[in-house]
Length: 143
Image 1 (cartoon, helix red, strand yellow):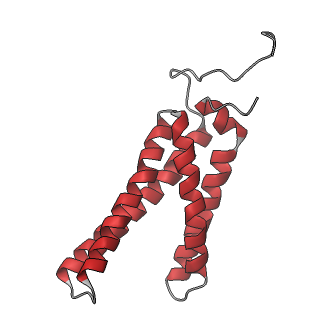
Image 2 (cartoon, rainbow, N blue to C red; image 1 turned 120 degrees about the vertical axis):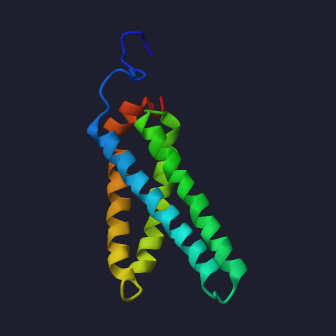
Image 3 (cartoon, rainbow, N blue to C red; image 1 turned 60 degrees about the vertical axis):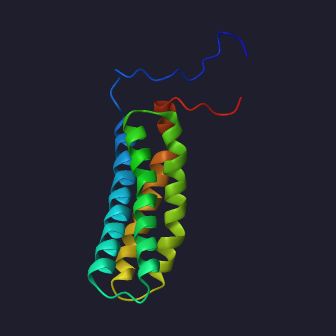
């Protein structure tokens, strides 16, 4: 590779953050908040109600809160233009797709939740996989 060929430069922290990157961070952040809220709800209802299995309910709540931390950290990293944040954010979106599919195949209030989750996951993937996002994060393709 000659010195005249251009390679993606590391983005300047003072340059304005692209709207696409902000939107991707917002999607990841909203998913994180939903997971954490679901986990807290599960923990509170398991402590105040009479679950069939207290240990299982508590474990489910703690797991949802812990899983919510992953997209929350990814959203923070995207806002700060950290290249490492793109991977966890993409993985979160990919993990959301089978959950959305399961919700869509259920009945009642699960169907609208599945629609919202599927739309968020697809939107997040489109935003994160766009070449402009990779450029904004300083992620280089294979040489």
